[in-house]
Image 1 (tube, rainbow, N blue to C red):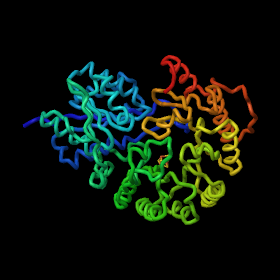
Image 2: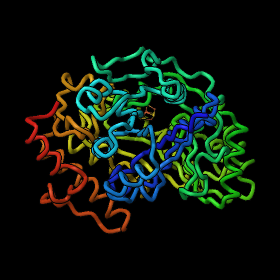
Image 3: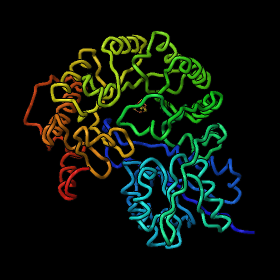
Image 4: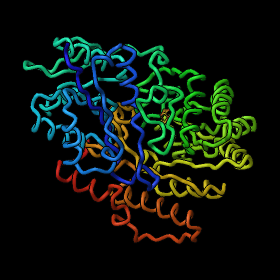
Length: 463
Ligand code: SF4
């Protein structure tokens, strides 16, 4: 009888303390858990031994330690889930693996690999294949072919480099019934107690179309996970002693969804042991919404504002009503729910004065928790497609930060980002703000601008 094929799945963590919070990310490799669920649904787990690289390695270990840990497992196939924050390191580690074990089959997936599959396969000969889009179907089909010793060509959603050329199969149709794949938490493919927080995807897809966001491009329709499954997962996490949960759902408080979702969460979280955080649309928050949030022990809500400037909002296909935003914040705060608001600097149409107005608006509302992001012009987004028309100059490589736009020079982009962050920092420390226009590149530091400039100078200009 043939020995089981050994698969190692990896998702390298965020290496910089950025993306607004200033905290290191303890990312739960949910995408990898889904891949194991896909192998399970395809009946392949009897023929494979699968290991997910643990957080000690994916988050904290040095490159050499990660390579050695992966090779120690003696995998025939290594899969990496790729995002803009880990693609470079993933490629570096993949090349190290191939150098030490030339017969290894390395496959990439995730948004960053999906959008750049042609480039990745043609420029990086140590990468064998790229799964484009959702992996639950295409990845098991790839493994099934490898188990049969057949060439994995013609698998929908797969790009593969063969000796003659790179072959791209047509895109895989959306998985309509996502409930068909078992919960990776319930099956124990992801240890629910290991990551310190329960991350749950309650839906896949979004009905909104913010031009800077890749998500609607990736998932053009929404598919919800079963409420019973949600309830069981919450119960399991509570039993495992988890006290924090994050609900990944950009349409959480759509009318008709929020009630059943909150009741299912409350049923699973009977003792109120897990305190949840979620995203919400301000214009859809009513008193009943806040009551439902409270029932589900949702104690923190993130609202994306990005800017109050209508010209910039038009450019990114978003709307804003000061009245409904203020009412939403007040309603949540009255219900004892913490409000965190996200803003983006470097948006097309946003001048320095507009960022000041956005911050003034939030501070007048008494919001103390503001996350400030520097615009990323991500591959595959509408904003990227319109970059020329909007005069956007951005890093050609991840993380694709904006360098310059029509309103702001490179220097001003630095200034406005550091201004916003300094003002937010002073607010959270309750220190008075006094404008300091000497702030500049040094303030921005690791968050990108100095390094952006040098990398762009090296590469001869933004895209
Ligand atoms: S930013 Fe959020 S609301 Fe906008 S399209 Fe992306 S996921 Fe949807």
